[in-house]
Length: 224
Length: 350
Image (cartoon, rainbow over all chains, first blue to last red):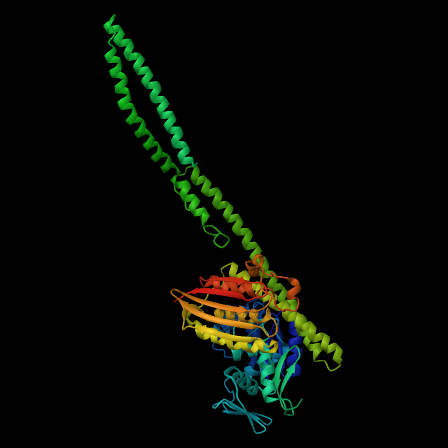
């Protein structure tokens, strides 16, 4: 998968490039908006990571121009401003995803990967990680013959984590997808919910499936 | 005493004095003429008649003058009264508005000009401060992004030891906190500058209250705090759904944070005539009366010794207050030390 990273801040561009490359992406870096637009038109990228504040031409304008020309390359917007209105503005301009700065690298990588999968998400109704299953129709989770009662929120959290099994989910993604919050609530809500969920699905079972990645977020996976 | 009354009195005095001088002059002149005319038999009756005449015509003239004077002064000062009313309405949010001119090109127009120039200068200074804060927040994001990114890279480095990883993770936590402060500052600065528009729609407030009640129950579990929903009337308000959820979660989180282990949190939502009245009370140390109004100040921390263990960016209640005010509502605290502390929010119904 070939990705264009448009970021004028050298150090940020550098660690984003390293992180994406270590996950097997081919990465091109471009520090200017106008050059990025030209590159995106001539080269077929699988995804673009686009900063908003850029020299030459700002990210939103690059994005609008791309979409106006019928270019559908998936775009993940990065922004230092991190304001609700801006997120909406970005998505309206044709962005596929939005990540405010400062971001978690693992989360950026997960979202870039998701860009490639857009539209082809699993439609399975029964999700499975190791011996844990979740029926998305009856909202029932089961592990080792034991059935768990889940609240609506716990169900959505578990469904989200199981659908992205094997990939790290940052707090920001969880808050967006499970709580539908546009803002960082500034509470440890996610951590408390995960702890409760873990008590249900992991206590008394091996291996532990719901794992914490310190400083990053959570991941649901089979192996430690 | 107002200028109007004072001027009216002065005017009355001058009018009376001039009438008096005029009357005395007329009286002397008339008496002279009469004496000259009748020579040796001055007609006392004619003199009396004259003074009576002056008195009868003079008094109404004085009264009329008085009324006229009062009306004139009132008319002259009306623009000052209007100006005062207009100036009274000026505050830090509408400094860009200008006072209207009367268009007469008089002294008051000049005063209006000078005043408008002053508010324009103030407006400029305020904008400078806001822009400065916005730019500062933005500039802070770049080094924060780099710091966070590099610490995270180091955290996943196979060569880092467990102790190093622990330290790195703790530094990342602090960076997250710093980022939250910067986000909060950006939000409030934009709100101050009127740059945030609410996306208003019909919102079922009771549903949002039930939702934050459920979240509060989860948040309260580790401290074994009991959370109750005393009453939840079906209530629809016009507002920004996301902002209202942010407000409720903010207040619920506060009620749990500033509680004591094994304490209580009570939610209630009442529909009362034209307002939706929400109350969230919690047990705990409470707020001293002198602190109750100050809790909405940015970065205000009540009794620091009580709150050392409480995390947060110090802007939560300022943001909550902004959300309520933006919805034309009211928010206030009532508290009895070591008893219940209650935050009340009143929002106008749809």
